[in-house]
Image 1 (spheres, rainbow, N blue to C red):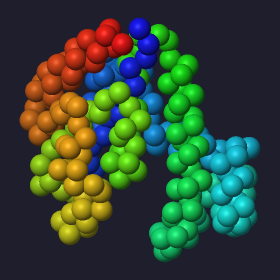
Image 2 (spheres, rainbow, N blue to C red):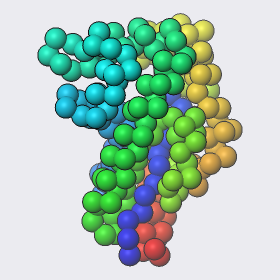
Image 3 (cartoon, rainbow, N blue to C red):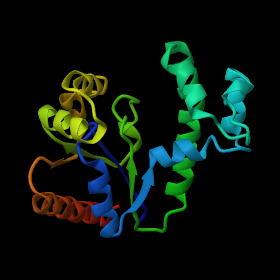
Length: 202
């Protein structure tokens, strides 16, 4: 038996965080890409060093940490700068994720939460992919409720990501999250059983 490494993805507002929490409650080891992408640019890391080399000391805060706002201003106005930043951060995140997966105990189910899995073409690096899926209108409604966006802004954010079809195409398991919390929990239970069968067969 070895470690089962599974990616969890879904569009903005689909409910990935809730599903990840339910899987963690059942014993999954969670690796959150957002947390890793902050970790790999902390002071003293090669990631932060490379960012300063590319963008200059103006992207540092007074305490030597990354000034996200200053960096954000640069990269949102310049597609090449954004690509350069991704070229620095993404390999560092992948390296850190691989380290964490390698250090998981034998027989573990490791779930990597990766919002932009499909956009980054990362789906083939895992033993399976769970997609949390909801209709686009549900995504838009949730975004408007939590982020104070109007309909047009919310739809623009949804449309900036991979389409539902593109995500569903790479899914090994789909958790449909437009019903009740109980329905969601039941679906997570089914997927958890499937993951346990799979890890035992490795």
